[in-house]
Length: 450
Image (cartoon, rainbow, N blue to C red; front, side, top):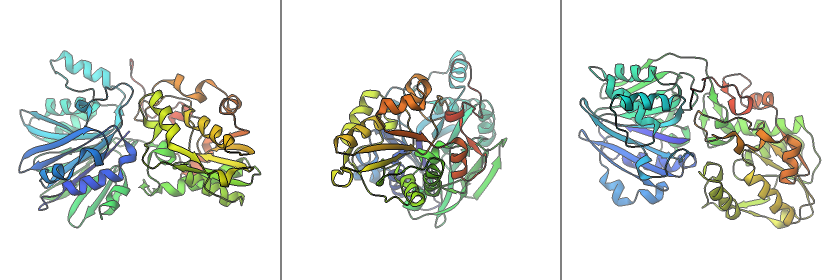
């Protein structure tokens, strides 16, 4: 998972400020590394490193990054990548037809296959990044038209991706043919913005125009905005974006993320009515569903857990030890609200079970009479190879335990997961989603060896 943003301006030479604040708004999509690259009169300057946006980009760095076209990324380090500055994006590449910078949110199902093919043809890779494969294919096919080269390169790629590419005079955004990963188009005055989520567009004072369509190539240069279509296939937005990944104030493919989570909370109660004294949410990703649950059940909603706002998202940390340490210092019970109470604890998902087990234990130690756990997504049983870092099914607690066994493992008084049909209804009631982590059925086949 990553967050990407790009800005094109005809005359504003300080668009790095837009990228900086936009990346702050996208920080939830990745905490391992961040980077900005910028076009300065045809020369690509950049800064990228491990760490959070506020740590990497000092005022001196932002003041140095001058230019009218820029792209940026925040990213997490997947289990298969070295957590290294080398693997920070955007990637900047030079080749015989010029230079470009590129960043990506997503994953390639045939990454190993393509990389091996390129290596056999003499390409030397500098990173573990899937986006370097795409950049290498673009360079391979770039004869006359860059757009034609991009089309040929992406015709060989299988996977989920939102891409933003910067050249010396243009900004190009591309969304995969299924629209698995989100990508939005906005404007601030006459300047164009591409972003993973609308929250980043709004954060910098921009106006959301529309979503980039599945299979669309959107191009902005001094001649204005235009777009072309690659092969467009059945829409399959990653439903986990609405469950957990996206910020609740974002708007994705005609769906408000907040509304989807609120609806899921209401449906949770409708599917499994339960009596209790209070409803609490597991902060922050379970909060909205908890509010929906409380409204439907008429059980009072209250804060029961206080979150340390300086701790990141433990789900996207690369190792189990780091995740467990993060949970210990991230959450603290509000004892005055939960002591001697029967609780409904609503969370967005259970992936490995690390956080929810410690949360239930923490609530019991703080004096809760009972803890009934309600999950606003179905059991995550299958490994995602399309951008959500759940690569090994032995790490997924629902893959090897039944619901009752999970309940015992986390020491809850009861446990219920929303049905898959209930989640789809909460998200808008149609079938335009990738639900592979719940059903095992993906819109793209996994390549051999992946």
